[in-house]
Image 1 (cartoon, one colour):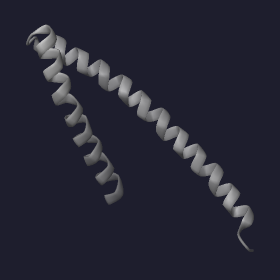
Image 2 (cartoon, one colour; image 1 turned 180 degrees about the horizontal axis):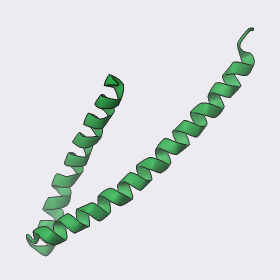
Image 3 (cartoon, rainbow, N blue to C red; image 1 turned 90 degrees about the vertical axis):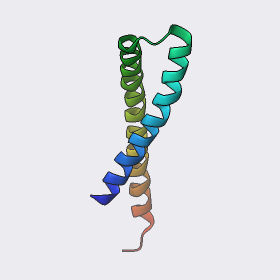
Length: 76
C-alpha cells in the first residue's frame, strides 16, 4: 500500500505544481474571477486525468505483453 500512497502524493504534488502557473496565467489574462478559474482548472484536470488513464492503460497492456514474452524464454 505504501507504493500506491507514494504515487498519489507525487500526483498531488504535480497537480499543485500545475495549478499555480495555471492560476497565474489565467489571472493575468482574464483577471481574478475565482469561478471561471476554478471551472477552467476542473476542465483541465478532467482532460489531464483522461490522458493519464490512456498512458496507464498503455503501460499496463505493454507490461502484460512483455511478461508473456519473458515467460516463453524462462527455463521450466
